[in-house]
Length: 176
Ligand code: SF4
Image (tube, rainbow, N blue to C red; front, side, top):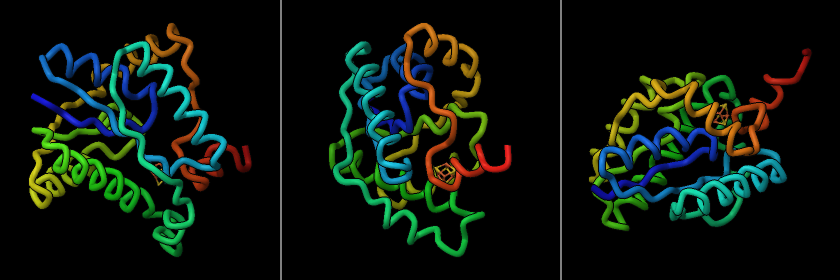
């Protein structure tokens, strides 16, 4: 089966790619940049993914542009619920590209993170999949949380300290 995998960062992609390939899937990655702030951080994560992808012989589609302004506009005045918009836009963008590229399914490395809202991502992914017409491939990749971290350290990949948006950077550092 041909699967398009939304990749939030190289570290979170290690275990899902290993798992999907072990199950016989043909995986291509998709990198969405608009929720990663500031721009220099986005470049750093993209470069880490490029290094990782070269090591893994993984093809990746990198979304054009850097719409930080659009992201901020869409979460303004409801910052505490920003992850809903963020998940939805990332999953929908992936599903649309999967549909256009005739992939048989799409998925996301967000399912690997223990720090994300796993059940919400699953239900959103499934509902977007139905509306776009490409199934959402679900696995609980959190089972490989430790393994993924160990592998990423061994590979010497850049490991970021916050989720992505500028709000999460504040949550991570402000007042600590
Ligand atoms: S905390 Fe993470 S998931 Fe939530 S809006 Fe920011 S980048 Fe997106």
